[in-house]
Length: 142
Image (cartoon, rainbow, N blue to C red):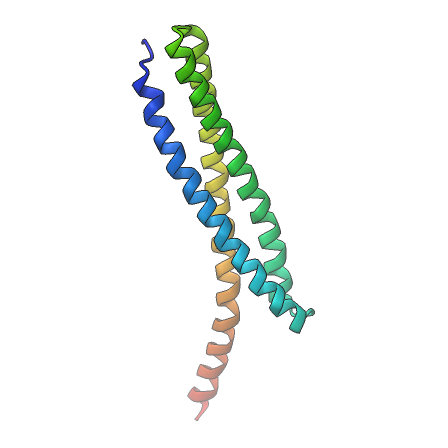
C-alpha cells in the first residue's frame, strides 16, 4: 500500500485535538491540586487528602507522559508529511508507523489515567457514603 500525503494529514488533525484535550485535563488537574493544597494546609493529617495528593502526583506524571508521546507522534507525523513531499516513501512509511505507535502509547497512558482518576473520585465518594450510611442507620433506629 502506498502512503498518500492525505493519510498523515488526517492523523495530524486528530493529534492536534487530542493534545488540546490533554492540555484541558492538565489545567483541570492544576486547579484541583491548588484547591487540595489549601485543604491540606488546613488539615494536613486527613487521610483522604493525603491519598488524593498521592493520586494526583501519579496522574500529573501520566499526563506529562501522555503529552510527550502525543508531541512525539505529532513531530513524526510532520516528518512523515515532509518525507512524502520529498518522495522518500520508505522512510515516510517507517516514520508514519512510529507516529501511530507513539499515538497508541499516548492513548494507552490516557486510558490508564482515566482509570486512576475514577478511583480518586470513588475515594471522595467513599467519605460521603460513610457519612450518609451513618445518618441512615441513625434514622432507621427511631
